[in-house]
Amino acid sequence: NTIRYDHHTTHAGLACYGSGMEEAVCFVVDAGGENGCFRIFRYKEGKISLADRQKTGENLGGFYTFLTNVCGFDPVKGEEWKVMGLAAYGAYDEELHKLLSSLYHVDGCHLIYSQDKKGTRAIHEQIKAVAKGGIKDFPFQAKLAYNGQLVYEEWMTGMINNIYELKLSENLVLSGGCGLNSSYNGKILSQTKFKQLYVPPAPADDGNALGAAMLACYNDIGFDSKKSKIVSPYTGSEIGGIGLEHFLQFSGSGKTRKLGTDKYKVVAELLAAGKIIGWAQGKAEFGPRSLGNRSILADPRRKEMKDIINERVKFREEFRPFAPSVLHEYGEAYFEHYQESPYMERTLRFKKEALEKVPAVVHENNTGRLQTVKEAWNPAYYQLIKAFHEITGVPVLLNTSFNVMGKPIIHSVEDALSVFYTTGLDALVINDVLIEK
Image (cartoon, rainbow, N blue to C red; front, side):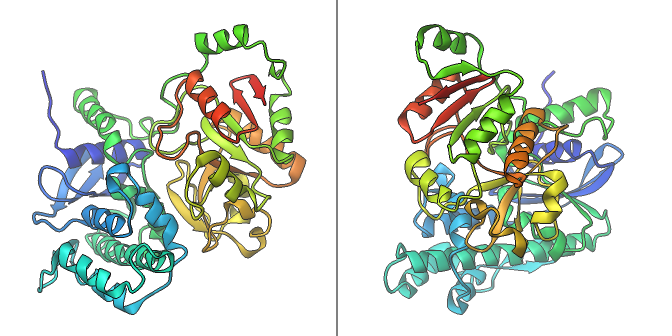
């Protein structure tokens, strides 16, 4: 038999069943499903029930698509990340803020078109009129990104606070494409009354197939909410196998060797010496973020690393930041109001005393989109960061996805070797094999 679930319900299925929570309110926000762009669900005792939904065309995901486009980036290529990164270089501008916020206003748990219904096209024309040096002039572009992100956050905070007043739960589960806005996710617990927040590893549409499967499983056999919690996002394809065997057989390179029990110490020493390393281990991550199995790693103590990797490895804009992977037990020492962020889903502010320790992963506004690392979640990555900490005194690594701009994250030995030999990577580690240039 074929069972059909609507778009937003599958978002909720992944988030609720993957959270490990016994009860929560689930807010699904994206650029659209079969009917509307917002839904609120109640999750209790394994059951997901609709509490409220947006019936009209207001669209917060669509607003961010518009903002991405107006800033000169391509939303079709998923360049919303660039807007979030660029916003840190901007500042509040009363005129831009007023223009952007004139599109919608918050009414209870909903967004409502403002009375004059200007629409995005009219607002775009007004923005162009304000941009004296052109929208793509960097200072204006950054100011536009900042104010657009600010307006997004104000709308989200208004709706989430009103959702709390429904008294459905003190736990919030956030899903849909807007769940990828890590710049805002890290502020939710401080700006709203909710006590706990969960965002799944793949809150956008790539997670919907799993959400549908979890819904069907619950309907068929039921679910233990604690056992259904998504602990590991490492469910993708395995790397190594015959591709790696062939490379070792035919490479003939003296700079290729298998590592033994000293694997983590050897790699940590290379990182501490300033080497940039491609790190490919076991199964790939599920979701859009590289979380220590398909990653490019470097020493966060070296401020110049940010520019070097952007220029020589990733071939991308210099304003793009890099993520800090931090051992969980040291999270509170590095971040204000520390929260676990296992899927790199939250951006938090660094403590003042940590800024000079890891300058390569500190963004322009003193924040970082962190990944919390626990040994139970990823033993190999944990041991590598631990070894780096023992050498340097810093329990943090610079982590970015193992790809170049505009290309998919690597999934095969051939992919890894291609990036390694065509970029400024110094070394490549595939499982237990170290390859150096």
